[in-house]
Length: 462
Ligand SMILES: [Mn+2]
Image (cartoon, rainbow, N blue to C red):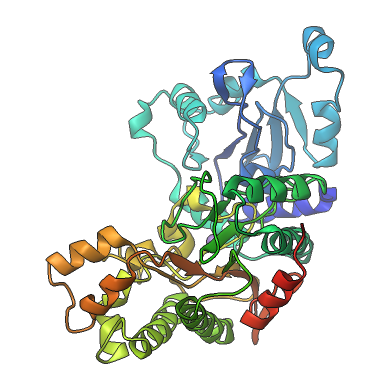
């Protein structure tokens, strides 16, 4: 945990935004895999972690605005629990470390919540079934009619979007371990290996440093499949390997890095050309990062840079700006340039992209293919932490569909593109802190120039 003041200050700031009522924060439970006592690894809810800091399951907290008190609801281990799992730090001890005012048994939550009738109860959107059911029971609503508090969502987003010095230190720890993990992946990848061997080696490396993956990694020669979790392919000379992997610190802060590199010693000439296009778009976006600029505008600039390159190699044609305005680039770049990063790898995605990444006056476009997958569009402010991750992905099914529909044929050279439907995908991704005047790339530098990647390949690990 951070020191106590950090949690009490965070809660005080939240208190100051409300005049009455109760804020209910629900922790997560250990979710069963195939029977109750065989569970998935426990991960605390990130907003609960942010305000309370305690990682144990089956906790809830009420920030009672009228009393200006934080009450934690949870149960100490029973003697049966201690027999099976050993005595652990008590909830009371953890509550003290978090500066909690009062600790009550979990089953008093309902009574406490309803002790004054006309008080507003603010809660965040639940994403775990258990908490949906619990909220339904606590509030006596059908679970499909739960009404999360928009004012609470906005207050939490406002706070969690600005990272403090302590949080930046945590995020950099996560990036630094991920950088070493990515170097290991580049150096151990060679013809004949299987994708899962690379993934497993990274996990072993990170866990030796006390950090689990922050999300299921994408380690694949089929990099055009955006969230490809299949890792069964054997990789061969001539293949690309796309590795999108990050880790999480003990306090829950995530990193999210991607590199794409040759399985053999060198890229083919087309791979190198497309890599340079993605790298150029990446650098164009990177140098625009600063407070005040809309991330959507950086995204569009990166799209233009991608199109310029795709025109040079003959995949596209026409005017790059027009191509982007018409969303023709989305055949190659179907997703967004980046997203917020913090306690979640897609930070605060559970609270709603509209609140995290957009504003009321400039809402998210939820319909247009391509831009609908941009999770962050609004103007950046100092203290934001985000990813930049342009890519080029050639998806055969999508290309064939667009060609059948003759979509954007003024911008796309289908005849030439069709010769390269098996290309795959390339993405480059780093993590950034936005500053008043510019940006800081978080953590150690991870090789991204072609010659630097070749340097790692030349020092391969057997
Ligand atoms: Mn990412």
